[in-house]
Structures are given as structure tokens and as C-alpha cells.
Amino acid sequence: MDSKETKSETYIKEQKVKPCCACPETKKARDTCFFDMGEEAPAKCYYLIKAHRECMRSYGFDIRLNYCSFFY
Picture 1 (cartoon, rainbow, N blue to C red):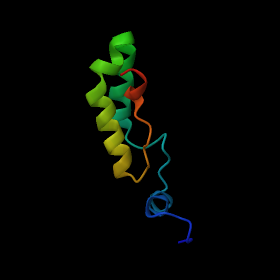
Picture 2 (spheres, rainbow, N blue to C red):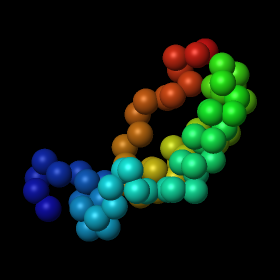
Picture 3 (cartoon, rainbow, N blue to C red):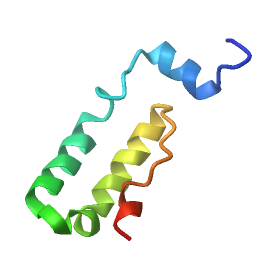
């Protein structure tokens, strides 16, 4: 492990999971909710957004952006 490399980055490299491929179930549910709810999606889909962020974090991805922060 490089001195500049974090534990999360090492985990991701070891698992060889790309962000686009991690958590397909929560990603699909989140995306479907957004398409179905339209403008109300940020409020009505928040629990799905939160579940997807938690899943991504479980793979070691550093999720800093709060998707709903733009709407509240």
C-alpha cells in the first residue's frame, strides 16, 4: 500500500469493483424511483438514495455528495 493510498482505495483495488458496477440492486431501485416520481423524486426517493449511498460505502467508496442537498 502506498503511503498516500487510503484503506478504502486499497479495498476497492483488491475487490476490483468499479463504482458503476457496485450495488446494482439499490442503484436500479433508486433510478426507477427517480424516473417514476419526476420532480417529487428527491423527497419521495430519499430512502433509496440513502440505501444506495450506504451500499456504496460498504464497498469502500467515499460518497461525499448528498444528492438531496440540492433540493432542500
